[in-house]
Amino acid sequence: MAFSWAGGTRGTGTRTAPGGAGDGTGWYPVARSSDVGTSPLPVGAGGQPFVVVRLAPGAEVTAVGARCPHRLVPLTTATVVDGRLQCGYHGWQFNAEGRCTLIPALGPDGAPPPRADLAVPWAVEERDGWVWLAPERTTVARPPRAGGSHPAPDPEQVPELPEPAGPVLGNLDPALEHAWHPVALAAELRDGGYVQVRLLGRNWTVHRRGGALDADPPAWGVTERLGLIWLAPDEPRDRPLPVPEADDPRCTAAWLPPARTAAPAGPLVDALVDVAHVPFVHASAAGQDGEVPDQPVTREPGGFCSRQERAVADGVLQVTYVHRAPFQLLLRLTPPDGAATTVVTVLQPEDADSTRVYTCLFLRGVDGQPVPAAVLAAEVAAEQAALAEDLRLVAGTASTGLPLLLRDELHVRSDRLGVALRRALADFAAESAALDRATDLEHRASA
Image (cartoon, rainbow, N blue to C red; front, side, top):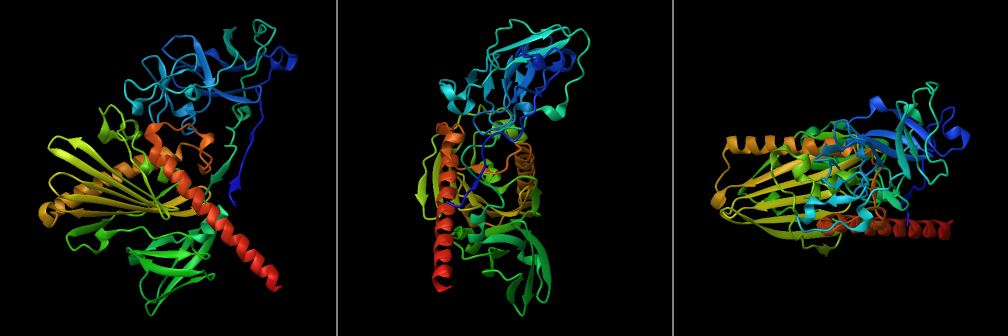
């Protein structure tokens, strides 16, 4: 399959110092004791990345692996909560031995699986005002005396986090050539005009002439749908997202201003279908316990659908997710009173580290009544605030794309939508690769 493969460790730098790792003791000075507090500090020892932290003010130093095994989020963004290190994405908590003690999405009776535990060094010790790590077993029981001769550790020598071993779908993956991508709001392109856009690491100019659309350089196709201009660089293999609200006269539509994040599209879609992160990322959800109800998933051509029911004060809230690969998503909320809020999000993969986000709200009032302007404005503002929080979240994950090999991350039962997303994207990438192979064979046969 024509995935972008990445594996191994990108950085192998270690912290060395006279009398430390350089003399074969197996101990590495990684930080001054005074620099380690209750905020995780990234360090490296023996080519391995760790974070060091005190799980209470003045407590002993704890050293654990540098990222959460769940979604590979760097634990430099974690916080100390009740003597545990808590990942800022889904609230997973780890004790001083690296053992995962809590996964909020599983509820109070949920047991973390063994793979949820963090890697830890063989030993960590403070001596002469320094924090020392022994990443592997060593015959030297204690680190050597510092004697005041050690330079401050160089932050540039902290190893980069290793990439997943399997395929990672990033913004420049060749498979994305075979999809329709949004490149502009239809309102941004008047007749006789043009817009310059960035897509898959290339510049494009899209024209509207006499109502017809075209692109320079030439693309497989350019079209208008759902109030957006779409461009397919090569023969598309994706399927359009069904949005019945777009043709429903009872619905009022409102576009958010297009947004942008310095992160790939795949991890952002993953965040948007993920429920477990809500209590730990979104201010409006403060006080929620984080337990995730059952999420039935139905695989559909080009993606998946999930229809759920959640008990609320006055009845049952119906929740529907619909995904179409690669980056089209619909979320519909239907409360007991018959009103409905639908959020459509589609993503434009501009560059490896840039994604443009298009979001449209469709609101239907009770009994199909028009939605008051004040209500519409409030809903738009709330959606903008939630989206901004998600954009900050994914930008801080330092991700190069979405891992498609399930083994590269740790999935629990609350991750069913995320698993379905990865499978849908893997299928899409495989179909695109097959199309490329068939095209190549045709070209060779006709040469």
